[in-house]
Length: 106
Image (tube, rainbow, N blue to C red; front, side, top):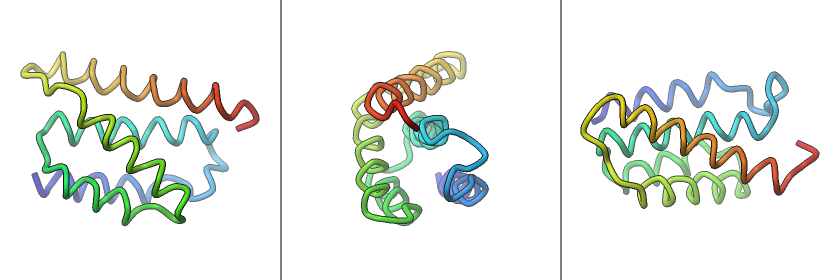
C-alpha cells in the first residue's frame, strides 16, 4: 500500500503546478485517476485524504482533491485488473466532465 502512496506523490509532482502544459480539467482528471487507483488497491482512506491535502498547492485545490477522494472511496473495489482499469477510467472521465461543465473557460 505504501508503494502506491509514493507513486502518487511522484506523479503529483510531475504534473505542472499551473497546468500550463494541459488543461486544468485534464489535469484534474489525472489526479482523479490516481485517487481511484489508490481506492482500487484498497489504500486506507485516511492515508489518501492526508495525501490529497499534502499535494494541494492551495486551499481551493485541497477541497477539490479531498472531494475527489471521498467520491472515489464511495465507489466499489473490483477484483479483476480489467474492472479496476474501467473504474479508474470512468471515474477520471466523470471528474473531467464535471470540471468542463462547471468551468468552461479552463
